[in-house]
Image (cartoon, rainbow, N blue to C red; front, side):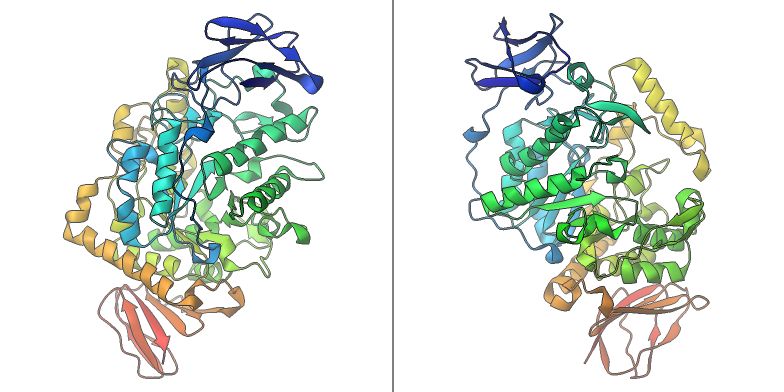
Length: 574
């Protein structure tokens, strides 16, 4: 077996394996290599200049945690069953985001696999998994990962993750993995011991930035791109969701994201299997999802918060923090037409002009959602929209998202109106780090007006346990009704190709601020929303039939339609 590590700052590097120290050969550009017999599952580490062995920066398995030694694995040993698998095209996606640790009571890959039939019944066809790389402690969101090549051992062994992906494919579910390349966690991060993975040329909320464009950055870029390729090639993921790419600071002529997109394209050609890269970006820059040939960064899609913020603020009346930029029906209508509300207009929250118009970008390149892990978990108590508005408003919100020209996404439990919160939780072993996380969590919510005492302690195991889904809720009538509503909306989208058409030029809206109604027109469909507690008569010319309604069906008369209070209705022209 070939062992290799990039350690340009070390004079001597030794491999520790099977209790022996084996000198490694120094090679050009700071690499050290040695061939050594080692069976899969062998424990190993690297010693720099005689120091204590450290885990491999590219460790494929860390069963003893972030401070333990690495273990070898044989990716070729797993027998895949998805030879005939072909993922759905992006315009057909309906995405379901989940967190392995709280999706089930057991919080493992195997337990999540046992719940996949529920997702099939719901009608989604893509599972987006929050980060599963190894992080400090048993429990966490995964965004503080430090061993980016190793699945988190509390969720299961590497082959159990492969079995989960295999099981998804067997049920027609594509799988996207959330990865974090803008920073690493504070505990167990040994990358800086080996090489200049970080640079003080930029400052980020997490400290020094990842070195994407400074001296010695070529190997750093390779480290992260190889990581992306590993998840796609060795674990058969159909795509990656790239966390907070606006925090990837790179002034290179070829941006890191562009370089990654090119290598992923090569993998697609090699395997004959399309892969999708989804960026999380708050830049409102359409170049993020523009093709490389047009000068874009080559991302296939992106999360875009503007629709979420516009809908959340309008329904809840919240205008604190970044919600101060939102709240009007006009902004909601604009978000439904083009995703970006801030497209070159002034932002009060940022105190500057923000964004750019997404001309000619198809709608399926923007993810639409009313809830996700950030927008729930980054609230003081992790409360869902279920806790903030009534069932009628929830149905209107889900109706707008699931019939939008964008790629719709649900957060786990949303489909039945789950009442369990999704809170921020950690389990750092270092008491000082644990206290710092707990205190920092309480202080960061000042701009939203939340009281420190209302913020659950991330280090308290009860915070984690209380965030697990309660699957028994599905047996209750109100939750079963919400599940049926989501299933009906997804089925409507699947039945009609025009609802999967991302041509934003075919979208038009009309609304009345005082009367609190909104119409969204898409080809032969008109989606009518009455946010008011009273009936509203709205213009709807031509012959239409109501095909789906959150309440009693409204019947148009050819010129107008009476919308029932707090209702969403899908009309189709006859």
